[in-house]
Length: 151
Image (cartoon, rainbow, N blue to C red; front, side, top):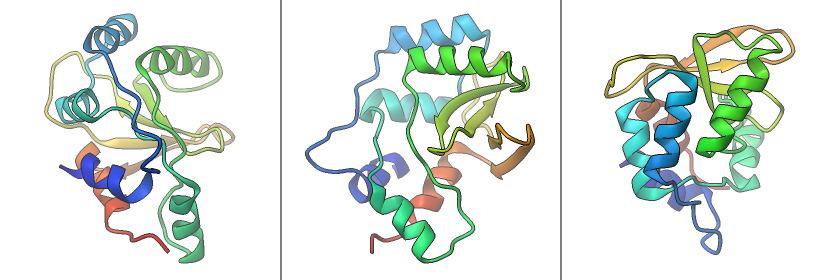
């Protein structure tokens, strides 16, 4: 599983991923009237929300990679609050935030009323209000970070 590998590579062993409660995740989905992709849901329910170390940003910057920084994964309450708050400031209604790049930009899934295995990942730039496709799936997105090795 890609998220498991990501956790081994890019989190500190003394800081375990934050557990996610299924009912909290379902509550965020109800609030936002969307279904998050099954691959993402299963991964975070099983493994929790990783908190990447600065080494990930260092690896991306030191190698001048065409890969966005990954700040934090949002917990269920944060998903609802951040998405709702940023929608008032320009985040398109058809996107749901699930992670940040550490600079205010949001990694998002498209909204979906049906349960789907995986959905594409987009980056919404809070300054330009532009949306960029960054991966065809959550699994592919997280795998991009797993292809890197720590410095």
